[in-house]
Amino acid sequence: MSKSSYKWKPEYPIPPGLVLREHLEARGYSQAEFARRCGRSPKLISEIIAGKAPLEAKTALQFEKVLGLDAEIWIGIESQYRLFLVQEAEAEKMKADTEWAKTFPIRELVKRGCFSRPDSDAERVLKLLIFFCVASRDAWTTKYSHANTAYRHSPKFTSSEEAIATWLRLGEIEADQQECAPYNKGQFQKAALRIRGLTHEPFDNALQQTQKLCNEAGVVFALIKPLNNMALSGAAWWLSPRKAVIQLTARHKTADHLWFSFFHEAAHILLHSKNAIFVDENNGGGTEQESEANEWASNMLIPEVSWKRISQASPLNARVVKEFAQEQGIAPGIVVGRLQHEGILNWSHLNYLKMHLDWDS
Image 1: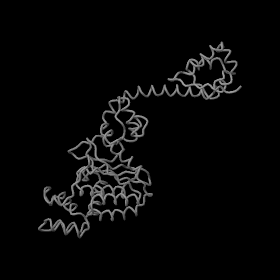
Image 2: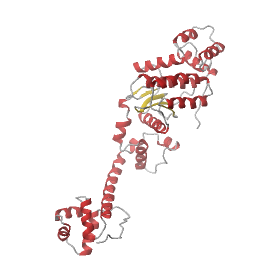
Image 3: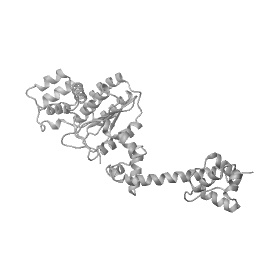
Image 4: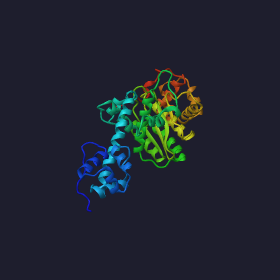
């Protein structure tokens, strides 16, 4: 028997049992007669018609021989119908996740071009799951919840967990796009020394060279604009055992703070576990690991011996700071920022030596 040229193209999913019933009626076959012709039990045929049993490939081949409708068509009808049932169940489940989805910065993600504006609550949930590359809210909680994340916040701010997770996902997307050599600790240590010397260079060029040096050492450098309800300076984490990520916000909008945050996160990459995600706010205090990262970053930018000299200098004016910064090969704003942080300078003093930053709207 030659295969039928008839193609089944329903406008909406229907159960294969309904199609089978129509074919049996057209031929005048009873279910028992059809079962005998297929060599199958009447019970199986009855359950397929009732939608209780799935139509498997072997059965579809038997239907093809008896009814002349291609097995591929039967399998297509079955798969479309089963997918439809699952989609209906998923849609009902997503209705329950509507309030959860509203806690995320959907408008900001639309503004940043991550996806188009959702037309419904269900579509909001769906677009959010696709953005995070997870199949369900439970899967999101397993992968992106901060239950196992080392993080801290400023006492003056409370960062939204959903905002932090969204910002980290934006960094993950950027990290996927940056091509890096396999991570090499020695290479990254050398890169950090060279990046220190870039701090007095024009800022755009310094950022470009920093990314290049990091990538050559197996580290992603991602500058991701902060979101509302989030008070973070940066994060350090591993996309894979061979690819580390340093992600910054430039939230404080001064170059000195950005560079200190960079070296703070670099310390986490060099000194601490690959299994942790370090999400940092003000780079001060906190756990032993945070204190260790602060100390490493401080000494990297201004070695301890040199720091003692400038911190005890008198008078402490712009000329002294500039000469010291030039001697150290770093931007004068870094010196000012450290002196202010240590309480040696007033927060309003010598700020004109800092480079101020701003995000394009």
